[in-house]
Every structure is written in C-alpha cells, then in structure tokens.
Image (cartoon, rainbow, N blue to C red; front, top):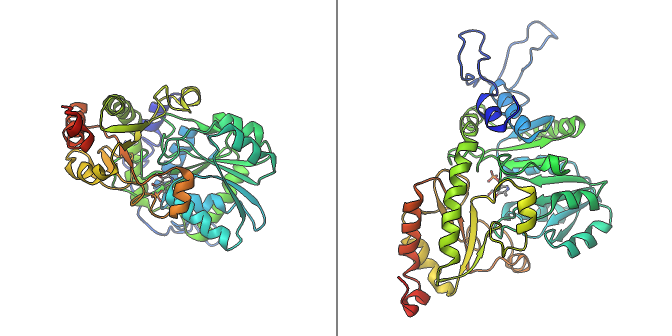
Length: 387
Ligand SMILES: Cc1ncc(COP(=O)(O)O)c(C=O)c1O
C-alpha cells in the first residue's frame, strides 16, 4: 500500500484469525495470559501494549512515514512523553505562540529545572537563525501555530539546527496535509483528538518517530509514566482515521469559502490564514503543505462585537478544540489560550480581539449564511450599512 488514503482505510483490516472479521476487533482486556511461566505472548498488560492500540500505532506510523508510534491518552500525554527526551540543563527551543496547554506544561517544567527553555518566534527567519546558532537538545515546532497560523519552515530549522532533535506538532494539518519527517523532523506529536479522530468523541494523542531508538525511548517513558491510551479510544480513533482524507477534502473546500467571505467583509479587520497570498508564511506553506488547513483566525474592527457575534452564530458551536466534523468558534484569550499568561499572549500577538474558527464539513452554504447573519450585527456593518 503506497497511497495515504489507502493506508488510512486499510491498515489492520482482515487480520482476525478466529472469525475473519474485516474490521479489527476491540480488545478491552487489561491483561493477557502467559503461554507458560516465563513465556509471555505479544501482549501481557494493556498499559504496556494492546492489540487494538497497536493497530492504531501502526496506522499512524505508516501515515507519517515513521518507524514507530506510541499512542497516548491525550495530546498533552504525547507532549509529556516527547519532553522526556530532555534532562536538566538541556536547552529546549520552543515556539512563542504554541497551544496554550503546551506553553503551560513547558513553563511549569522549566520552573522545576527539568530543562532550560528559550521561547522564540520560529516563523521569523531572523529570530529563528539567531536562536538556532546556540546548540539545543530539542527544537519544537508547531506549524501552522495555534491560534495565529504562523508558518515555520521545517526544512530550514533542520538545516540551521542539524544536531538537535526536531519535534513537530502536526496536529493542525495531520499527515493528510503535511509530512514533517520528510522535511527533516525526527519526532511528530499529535493531538489525535483533532483531525485524526475527527469526530470530537475521543481525547487522544500520538508520538511518531523516524528513528527506532528514539521511538523506543519514548515508548518506554509512555509505559513507565502511564501515558498510553485506552483501547476503546484507540478503536474509535482508528474508525475516525479511516475517513481522514475524505474529511480533509471537504474541510479545505469549506475553509476556502469561509476565508473568501471573511477577507472581503467590512466588519473584519484582519484574517489569519496561510492560504491568503498576503499571509507572511504563504510561500512556505505552499511548499511544505499539501493544503492550507481548516483553521482560520480573524479580528473584528470593534472588539465589543465579539460577544454578540459568537453568541449569534448557530451552525458554529462556541467550544474549544478543533478538527472535528462540526464547525466551532472560539475566543483564544479566554478559552484555548487562557492557560498562557496575559504577558506571554501579548508577546505572541494573541490579542483579546482574536476569534478562531475550526471549519467543519457541513454544507458550505449553511456555514456562509451563518457567518453572514452574525457579522451583519457588528457595529462597523451597521454604520456602513453592509448587507
Ligand atoms: C496544537 C495542539 N497540540 C496539542 C494539543 C493538546 O491535545 P489534547 O487536548 O488532546 O491533550 C492541542 C489541543 O488543543 C493542540 O491544539
């Protein structure tokens, strides 16, 4: 199997020896008998290994082009597992506008001297080059970043930090739209809660590595710390990933229509989307991604319009998270990025006036109609008389 949609649909099918089930069965058992004393089978205890979780890991490793994957209980568990690669005194270079939960974890760990951190705008070639002149054990990239959709040039980071372990959070695009290992990354982390599962009914994560030794080290820590995911979650996520590519096609089509509406609307001051030619990361996104993604952020002319706008949307649900089939609207400053200090948000450019959309796969006509009826309530529209 060579093509990604086929890998996503077919990995693990038709393996059931007992009944010939096409879809891999769900193995909930927490423990497995030994064949005899001192002779364990492939699996002995579900924290360490589980047949259902193993098929999801195999699928994700194949989709990302890695040698090994560890499936975890959440995206944060995946990030926790990857951070175990660092020891006290090691230097970690972090993007300054990453997901708020990642920021909180790294900030808390560095305060306990787990490692030394430099927060850097890695999307800016000048600050990036300067930061990567000094050796680092790990360089962490989140591209596109959450929530400002900044683009970091993965291949360039690889070139400028040849000796560092390069970790990429690929949550915002999934392997359907970006393949970081092919661009030089060593490790990929995912919140599978998002596009990989895609149905907003599982919290999960994964760490995928290019190199077997790194993968084994991460898997060892995941078992040791108890970070591995539950079998039922793995089964649901496996069911979700089967349709990843079909969903992504619709996500992209809908997002293009939503961005066109926002970009030309009198109530909207600024749109953040890498697909726009005016976006500073557009050329790199075009080169390193196979689609611009389905996350869009924007600012209104009048921040007082945020509350009425998000509350009058009916097809977009006011909720955190992203990447599900359903469209969502969020206010990063008080929701997804509330875990970041106000100071760190200001440095990262995440204003209180920013709104973030996760564009789902509903009929685009309904999404556009919903946005139009909500935007027309904005003060700047009422003043200008826009329809
Ligand atoms: C880019 C990114 N990475 C990691 C996470 C954490 O994932 P989880 O919520 O599954 O722990 C999130 C959550 O929103 C995210 O957006």
